[in-house]
Image (cartoon, rainbow, N blue to C red; front, side, top):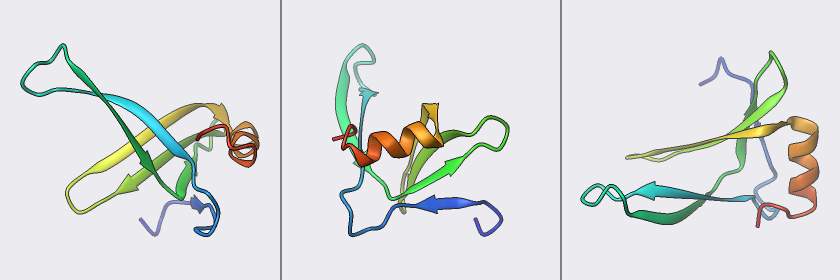
Length: 82
């Protein structure tokens, strides 16, 4: 992880909350609405688009945004992710 250029939000700020849906393992046509929050994000060098992620001991959360870093930071500043 030390070779990647991870960026962070100040942990004292309101962190973005990401909402997503997950399939139920027993009933694959049933979805559950979930959310996660992370202070970490990374910017793809080729086009400047952003991904957010969170790593825990037993899971990884990853969200690819359809926006560049400038738009991502503007939406964060305006609390558009809440």
